[in-house]
Each structure stands twice: as C-alpha cells, then as structure tokens.
Image 1 (cartoon, chains in turn purple, yellow):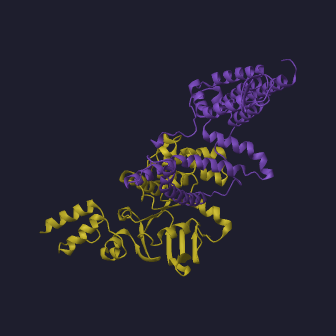
Image 2: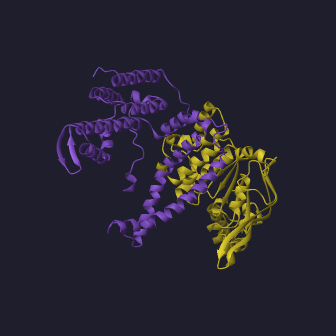
Image 3: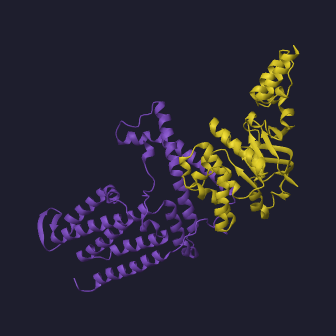
Length: 269
Length: 288
C-alpha cells in the first residue's frame, strides 16, 4: 500500500505547455506567484483567473488533477479564511463577541486571501503536472547557475534533488519491508494513542536510517568509480533549447506583468 | 601490455573498536603481498569467501583504495598517481554488488549518460554511446524507464551499460550476482561473457559462486588477504579438499565426481560441467 504514493505528479499528455522549455516554465511560474501578491482589486483577480484558465486549457490536464492539489491544503485555506474573517479590525462591524469581530473589511480580506492561495496552488500545479521531475531539477540548476558566483552550489543542489528523487521509491520499498519484518515479530503500529504510535515508529526509523547511510556510502563509491568530480568539465546529454514558442511565452508574461502592475497603480478601478 | 598488474600489493587499515578499557586500535591486513598479472582480453575470476580481501583487491583496480605497500598498475598507470585518477577510472570501470546503490539518475538513459557526462564528452557523442551501450546489454526498450521499475538483473545490466558508455578496456565486477535471483544471475553472466568474447573487454569477476568461475580463462583464489591459488579452472577445481579448506565449495558436478572417485570409481578429477560428467560416465561404463 505504501507504494501507491506517487512522486511528483507529472501528467503525461502532449500539449504546448508540456513542450515548453522547463527553465521558461519555472521562471514564468515564479513571476506568476510574485505578481499574485501585487493584486488588490477583484478586477485584478478576474484577469489572473482568465489567464490561468487559458493556460490550464492549453495544458490538456483535466481540471480534476488541478483541484487535487487544493484538497490537500484545504485545512490551511479554511484556517486562513477564519483568521482573516474574525480577527480583521475595520470600521463596518457586523457582529462582535470578545476578541472576535466580523467586519466588511474582514470579509473582503478573507475572500482575497483564499482566492490568492487557490490561484497560487493551481498555478504551481500547472508547472509540476506538465514537467517531469528531471526537467525540473535541470531547470533549477540552469536558473541557479548565475548565482554560483556568489557561492550558491547550483550543481550540488540539483544533484541532491536527483538522488533524492531516485531513492524515494527504493526507501519506500525498504520501509515497507522493515514494517513487515517488525510486524512479523509482533510490532503493533495501528493501535494506541498518539504517543504510543509515535514510539512504535522508532523500530522502523532506526533500521531505515542505518540502511540509508550505508546506501549513501556505496552510492558515493559508485559515483566516484564513474569519474564523478562535481560539475567541473561536466557535460550534459540532454541540452535545453529555448524555442520560438518559449520566447513568445516570455513576451506574454512581460505583458501580463505589465497589466497586473497597471491594475495595481493606475486609479482606474 | 598488461591490463592490470599488482606487485607486492599490501593494504592495511586500523580498525577502532571500543571495549571496557576505551578505544582499541587494531591493525588489520586486508591484503598482503598479492602479485597478480592480468592480460588484455582475459576473463579472470577472483574467488574467496566473505572477508577474504577479494573486494579490497577490486577497489584497488579502480583506485578507490590506495596500496599501503607495493603497487598496482592499470595499463601501466600507477594508481597512486593522482593525476592519472580519472584515466584509470575510465579504463577500468567497476560494477558493484547492490544494483540499487549504484544507479544515480531517475531514468535509465540518464543514468547511463552519467559516466560520459562526468568525463566531459560532447552531448551528441554521449547520446550515441548511451544507445550503443543499451543495445549491447539488450535493454533498448527500457531506455526511458525508471530504474525502480526494473528487476535486479535488469538493474545490474544497466549498471554494466553505464560503465560501457565510458568505453573502458576492463570491467571489474564485485560480486555482481550476489543479490540476484537465478534468472537475474544468468542474464548478468551471459552479458559479461558476451562483452568479453565479442567486445574483447577484459573482465575481472569477483565472486564466491564457484560455477561462475568454470568458464574463466584464469582463476585466482584469495584467502585471508593472501593469493593462495592461481591457474586455469580445471587445475583449481581438481583440488577439492584444498578449496574446501579455504571455505569455498566446488561446482556441484565436480564435487560429485570427487565423491565418486573417493568411492573408487575412476573418473577424471577435473570435471566442471554436466556435459563432461555425462561423457566421463559413459566412458567409464564402456570400460566395465
């Protein structure tokens, strides 16, 4: 059952968004997230929603998969909404009880925060649903490369992410094996209160960690045996190319950012 | 030119253990005075039981370990020379025991590309080498699979392909079949033999399975860090009692022949395969 957990959530279909250069996608997603925090008006949110819908349509990923991401952070959304709803001070008080007060300003703020969160998750879901983990790590390495001058270990970060991704299924398998081995010897993971259950995890975690360290050492040896010595003189088999489509997307993103900034600072609405 | 030549190779390390009186420093000699010369194109098997020092020897060939005394040269390159480190590792590739702990990437072809990428090979050339290596180990259809979806034998063949993509002259395999099921073992051994025969790659197979040694050109037996026997398989396996003294078993057929001889049935001492056994028994039958 433990094997059902999927890593990443790449949805393999053919679409324009899937074909885009991963670096461009990552940069645009970051731009999108930043601009979300610029928006103050409902017209602004309407505009973003329109753009988001267009991109989702282009990605050929069913809306159902996008909404899955939201379900997992539902608690955070509800929590944020409640806090903003009842703790925002304002002039138009509708209801008051102790430190709790419901104001018009509160309702507006709560709605905005929720919309912002949902859009944030949907936007980043588009990235992870249309980009394989490998492309994503390559993109992170490429985008961090300029920061190497100030000491950011771009290659090392990407290598660590690749190895982590590579070993998630292996370690899941191992966890499963250890759990079964401990259960066969009478371990009980399912009953008892929270403390007891947490304690019963120790006989799983200790062997898991020991084995992970052993694996790490063997892997280091194997990597060295294959001439690994950091990113000095290292080449890559898969080269990334910015295509015409990617440049168009970048241009569209610039226009989009312009509109968002205009909506924020021009006193039209 | 010798592919691998070790002269008086000795490796010592200090093991630190703790007992009631505090830390105990114990000097362990993992290899002592080992002289082995392996020629280009040979299929060599190094036998030894667990802890005999055979893996330590394997790690010296790839310059993962440095000799304490004596020397080891790969294609006349001394492994103690740091400037030649990457040349040595490119010439003598290494495949390890656990298939899971030597694959780096999340996609098969990316993993095979790892070695050439580290060597700074041109991207188009890497692509070519990856496709060739995949074809050599007959895994073309798995190019875009995740290693976690493959069987142990398949993973080990990918590890071999990863070494092949570096265009080595010699491959050292450190107990590559120890963690595999019989099917996986067969796949890997067939691949190794084909590489030796068709590609002319020198193979150094470290193992404790006797039947893997039957087809070797030469067999070396290491026990307690010392080289105790060397010769062609027939010479080695005819000495059943001596091998058992080193904690090693002979191939099953050889043992049967040995037991029959003890009972007074006159069979040759160097029977290694079932076919030879059948022939010998038929011959024996016709003499009575």
